[in-house]
Amino acid sequence: MQDTTKNGATGCGCKPAAEPKFPEQVTGMYILAQALKKVGIDTIYGLVGIPVTEAAYIAQGQGIRFLGFRHEQQAGMAAATHGYLTGKPGVLLTVSSLGFMNGLTATANATVNCYPMIQISGSSEREPIDLNQGNYEALDQYSVAKTVAKAAYRVNRAEDIPIAVVRAYRTAISGRPGGVYLDITAPCLGQIVDHDVAEKLLFTPVDPQPAMVPSPASVDRAMKLLASAKKPAFIFGKGAAFAQVEDLLTQLVEKTGIPFYPMSMAKGLMPDKHPLSALSCRSTIMEEADVVVLVGARLNWLLSRGHGKWSPDTKFIQLDIDPVEIDCNRQIDAPVVGDLRSSLEAMLNSLPSYKMSMDAAWVPGLQAQTKVKNAKFAERLAVKTVPMTHWSALSAAKEVIEANPDVILVNEGANTLDDTRDTIDMSLPRHRVDCATWAIMGMGMGSAVGAAVATGKSVVAIEGDSAFGFSGMDFSTICRYELPVTVCIFNNGGIYNGIGEPLDKTTDPAPTTLDINARYDKLAEAFGAKAYYVTTPDEYAAALKEAIASKAPALIDVQLAADAGKESGHIGYLNPASLIPVTV
Ligand code: ADP
Ligand code: TPW
Ligand code: MG
Image 1 (cartoon, rainbow, N blue to C red):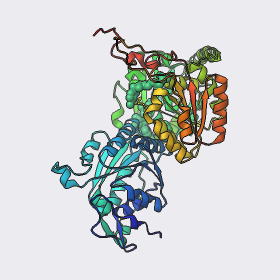
Image 2 (cartoon, rainbow, N blue to C red):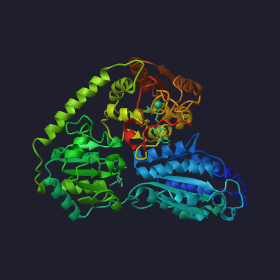
Image 3 (cartoon, protein in one colour):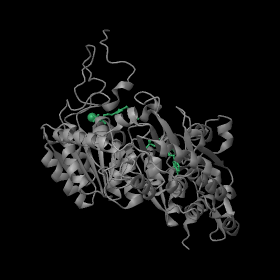
């Protein structure tokens, strides 16, 4: 075995009392790498420095892939996306204090989105933190993390590292997945343990993601309600994509003939172009469906929390692993609490005992509406406006991406998000990753790296110019690891657009204004990637096609008009007030 413990000193004033004598002795860092391998972790995303530099070197030396980033938030977004796409927790490694805080943003976001990930952070020694004595990068990280992570654990003794890693792993992946924080103090990372003692502490957990079978009574209640429905509909959420249940959903939809509506990241679980896809009929489902089956989708703000356009008479069946999600915003008439595979299997098994009573006109009505809406949409996309709008740019992206359906699409922005989601049809599951439940900006480059590394597939990231700014420097990470990622920046010169006008007499730019003349393609040149600057839909289509085919890092600056895009995209109604002229 390679002696990787020669890098065992932490370099932070927390060096082990003596250098470990390998192979008889090992450090906490060595145990950490071994413990991660035991639970099947093969990749770490992170950014090193005191006290975790050697931990990363040792992990790499032990055969774990380490991807180094320019900002911890992006490393965390990569870990979270890795977790979402593979179904196994992604791992983020951060340094203490600000590195930890930067990464914690991604851990919090993972928790909100139900992505499994583990943030491992070195922290400085406990005693001066607890007395607030001003030690190097001192912060009570564990207490901070507890407020936003699914759970937090702290390890103070190297012998506890194996059990702590297993606990973090189980917590991240079982029940409702989420982001788990694992704090390892610097002295613990450097602590020396006899190798044979350490070996005996390592183990692989048995059944870390146990099936959670729903009660037969809950399945029966749900099936009775579904069978009674005249205008039923399924709503698929990203919980179903995470649970990889597309096989069962396809059977249930096709056997019952009930239409389905996918939430943004559930697009592709069944093809958007499927005859039973009601993608264009969101309002009709809200207003008219009498029974709606939520499959791994929360009735949160993205579904108007069950109010607004929703008919007060609609009855809900909800399939979810988390019992406290039920009745969160509105009464759920038939909760089915269990893991989706078990719940859907139970429903499918009992299906022959029920006779559906769906109105014969319901699906044809939705299909007719879909046809009309699609025709209108196609008309809008056919106008190849130059300078480009989001729509004319997206007509080009649609053509190329739909011809490359196995490309994973990463997407963030406001108009850039909403219009891309509405324009580009997905046909494969887990091929769309976006800013999701919190609608945050700053997931793009990290998620693109995570998606490419976790799946080995090509990735296209469609980014608003503002959205890109949050993670842009990690384009260099895409380049350093030579990943097959094409980043498209929709430059309309601002947040929402580039025509904001200051309300007072300042000569400063408006709060929403960015750089309409910026040449983002020059950034790609700096890192040796393929660089394109496009001003027409045809140029964009040609560049995108070539970039995807190259399977190499590429960046396309997609020049839009400054007046392309409206404030807040589709969710302007959430602003507390519209702009009122203010004089100072
Ligand atoms: P969307 O934003 O696409 O509507 P959400 O993130 O709101 O999706 O909802 C995902 C839901 O899926 C969460 O309530 C979560 O508890 C649930 N979930 C995640 N994994 C599973 C699983 N394996 N089985 C059942 N439910 C799951
Ligand atoms: C972490 C607020 C929502 S959307 C957006 C911001 C800053 C950018 C929209 O502009 P973009 O797209 O990306 O250029 P487009 O096509 O509409 O012009 N900080 C965080 N998250 C959010 N959501 C914001 C700020 C916001
Ligand atoms: Mg913009």
